Image (tube, rainbow over all chains, first blue to last red; front, side, top):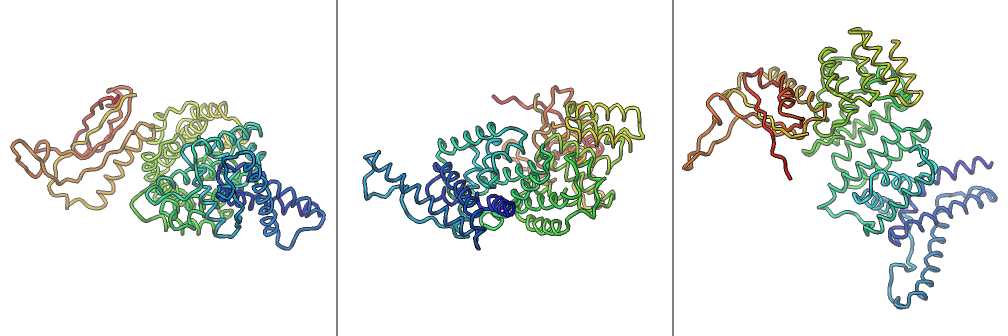
Length: 410
Length: 115
């Protein structure tokens, strides 16, 4: 029965770690975030020991909250005695930040604390790479070794990143609080961006660990839902991002590799698409069509929605092309430029697409040469082969190489 | 890279009620694809607003007239801020601009570098 318990604890860790850290940090202040992590980790250690001996309690979550609460109160009580004795200017009887009031794990309080933690972590003062690691750890409860695997690096590197990020939280005196109304839209932009990056980290991840990749995406979506559930953060752009994530996630099963969309899409089996997620995405897309702001999430969500119909019609590609034209003006990236050129080919033909593709000049991007190879097919097969071979030389992983070879032969 | 401003001048049209929606859509596509071509090269700095064809002109001694704005033949249709290595490259990028098909022109002007 060992494996059963281990499985349950592992699931609970993912679901509950972040909640408990948020509540404890909210109660005692963000400067104690590491203490909060230690307390919660210890709680899980105690759970492992106890549940292995006595079996899983009837309500494991309540069990965890009770133990975490005891450990928290114990820690800060002991800490208070120390501080009181060591620092004489702390007068007894005077209320300090560290006092023994209750730690509450109610659903409402957990949600509020997590939302405030989300805003604290998604603060522009922290470098984005460190921010993503911190978000994975503190908001999503990923273990250090999992974060290291997602970034194809080692635990030490991630620990260093986390240390620096937490140091920034302290030095910038970032508090856990809900942003005031006047700042909410801007602060939300940061939070949405981090959620978008988290999702992409899973969707286009370097790691081949499919379970981990899916979990990254689902955690990003969970944070999105957290923002949708709060009336202040439930804005059109929040819905646009949710729609985008739903449409992408609907293709998890159909998607076998990490190749760029334009290469992969034609090979997908649409019976593998998740229709429930597509429907949810449509709902969010509908909710996103309000206000007068068109964000890159809106445009990307619409493109993803177009791709949820497999029909290879000119109208569809014309719409996709126009969306990419707009997206390039809001948010240029080589990947968007390449996907736009592919849409140009499907909508306006190879000749025009080839002419524009040659101007792109993305000499170190293997997708660029895959695209050129694709466009030269049946126009100039010798050039097609040359370009595919350049793509092969630039490709880094075996999966990438396999796909390029397959494209060459079809 | 330097920055340049494309100024689109279009034939002055007092009455565009005869333009069919299909024609408008087709024209819109041409413009979007042309700007998209430049944007795909990562060379658009800022897509300026499109200007409506109505407005006023203020001249010396407080004389206010309704359009036409610059000369009788043309009006300013919009802007696009782009980046390019030279005026020559910027001019090359301007080729294919639908304003030219519409009987208008593109003015290519370097933007003063800000310090």
